[in-house]
Length: 99
Image (tube, rainbow, N blue to C red; front, side, top):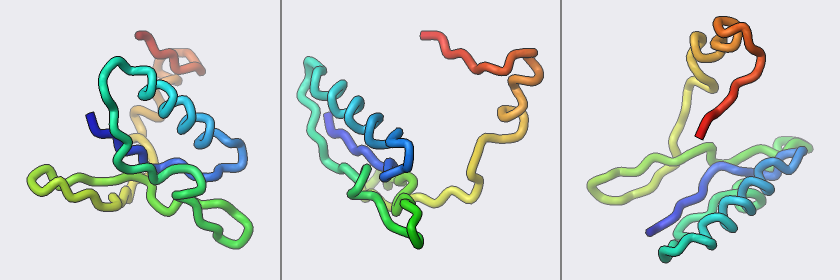
């Protein structure tokens, strides 16, 4: 398997770094061979805008015919309004995930 990790940066709370470490650790524990091909995360994906850390790449697109990887652009910065308001429709302020 080939693994491409893209999108984390040096956020002020350290969420991206913690997530990157957990992901790499989890893939390393897999019984199959996983090859890290791309790691555009944490300080490798960080730029400064003044004194604020900012990601260089938010995500990637893949040309499935050629395998070319390119930075993706996302004009919409969040989920659709119905998804954002789901908690109000369910009378719950927490989103719970089941496995």
